[in-house]
Image 1 (tube, helix red, strand yellow):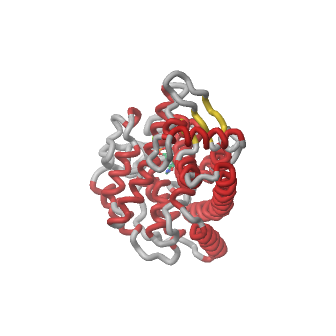
Image 2 (cartoon, protein in one colour):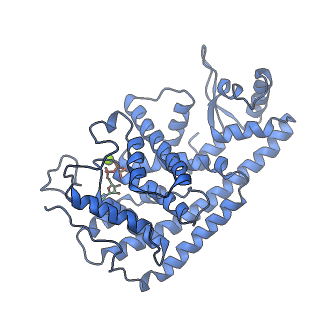
Image 3 (tube, protein in one colour):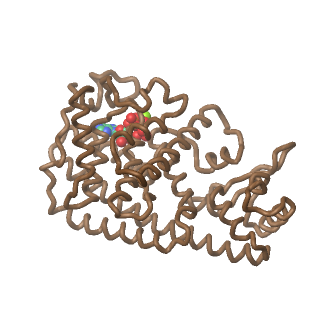
Length: 371
Ligand SMILES: Nc1ncnc2c1ncn2[C@@H]1O[C@H](COP(=O)(O)OP(=O)(O)OP(=O)(O)O)[C@@H](O)[C@H]1O
Ligand SMILES: [Mg+2]
């Protein structure tokens, strides 16, 4: 199989007419989600668990198995079940770091290939990332296929390394910054072309998915770079990969890909609207309950800390600068446990304080009752 020769962007083969209804709906749903974002009192805080869940699901497409609960428990200081799980968790935390790093970087300058290299370096900052040319574009030929397959058996052979790959990346970067008839169709093409170029030895899928919220934010479609597609892509993983595969081999496949992607934006925007609303309701409801239970000026900072880290050690919470004395914190925690707001994940042992969770929040983000 020969290395693929990518098309130059913008594509001239998009058939717009059949896409129009989907384009309208996707833009409308995204605007609805943006509307919800503007009603959140503290979006960064309330959406923080979304970001961790995105990191979990996007990494799951790659094959990691750790859950949101496991990541949060690890961050609270609990040992993972196995060495492999620990690696999974580390990759997930790297993914979240890369998302945040992108967000920070965009405050200073627009997206560019240099930032992409930095994000790659962050993403693969772990043992599994060794020998994978962290932070640089590949200089070897790679291919996509069943594990262990040879290049002859490959399903897809991305473009050959070297100057033509670099030129294709420059073309891709300049397309990213173009004004196109519809930004969401542009985003569908940006993601797929990135996967076709497959510029890295590993991490292409995850980086391509990190680009989604970044692009929406940079194009001012969202006020926060918090919109994730991995839940949809993970659920429809076979179709996701199949539609990408077809781009390398089938006439008319771009339109099918764009339809699949826009369908995902619509479905995910709906899901995110409902999740963001539920998180907001949970926050407001808990605020009232905790105020009534504790009659404390620390009720809201306590709640905010728990939203920031929904699984935590009580000693860690008591050590925060915005918290009162330890006895007062223990007292408030006791009341929250009694009221069923906090649950014990692990009893305290020796020098280690008990691990607690705001279970409702974790369950809401996971989409089912895991704790
Ligand atoms: N036939 C194909 N053509 C183009 N892109 C593909 C094809 N099959 C899969 N992909 C993309 O390649 C990604 C896998 O590439 P790679 O292993 O470098 O990325 P990753 O981030 O490590 O893994 P993953 O995407 O599985 O999480 C898939 O997620 C998908 O986005
Ligand atoms: Mg991989």
